[in-house]
Amino acid sequence: MSRLLSILIITISFNTYAFEDTLKSQNKRGSYFDVAWAPVGLSLISVDLMRDSAKFGLQRMARSMVKDDFYTHADDFLQFAPSALMYGADILKIPAKNTPWHQTKFLVISEMINGALTLGMKYAFGIQRPNNGAITAYPSGHTSQTFVQCQVLFNEFKDTAPALAYSGYSIGVTVASLRVLKNKHWVPDVIMGAGLAMLVVNTVYYFEPLKDWNPWKDRKNRKGELFFTPSFGNNFYGGNLRVSF
View 1: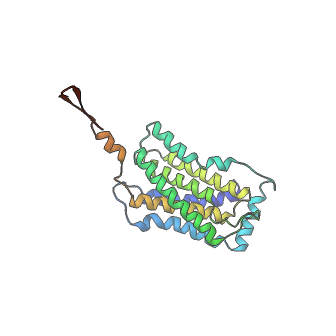
View 2 (view 1 turned 135 degrees about the vertical axis):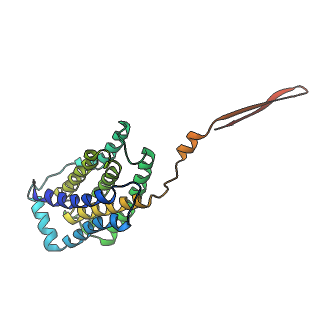
């Protein structure tokens, strides 16, 4: 396995191993520190690697594995694969931590927060891409987008289908690697993208915003009613119809 993939897999595996213990019980949340320290540590690694000697060295090592004109659109499609796996598992009735509605709710909330933070950091730091492109390199949007879904998939199925839960990370590492191999991002960009996404998702799962909001449940339990009251008068025949759902 290439050295670049080894670096990414080791750092991501370290993070997910920590969460396997801290998120083991659905009824006991533990402290917020338990679910935050690992992705924060991953992000600090990224900051340290932003040193020119490390950043340029890692990029040269990664790019030496492919031709200068290497390009693929695979990462543009793979970034949505973890969600497809999650909903596919729901269709197959594989037990999960939450219902599909709650999965979607936490996923959307995480995506919104992560997207805002990622975009804000891109323009706040203004790091130029390694291909001399736009100054929106840090952190990697594709990577953070993918790892939001990877972490949601992991949190939902780690206790009932571990193989499925961990499979998302192989997709995340692939997307991160392709962003570097395409010379779209520095290695620290993708590490920060992964760490930020994991932190956001686990924060959402820890505090569970809008936990009790489920309009579909209210509608499902509500019984429909139909009332018709006839009315009669001189030269008038009719009534009042009332329908409620």
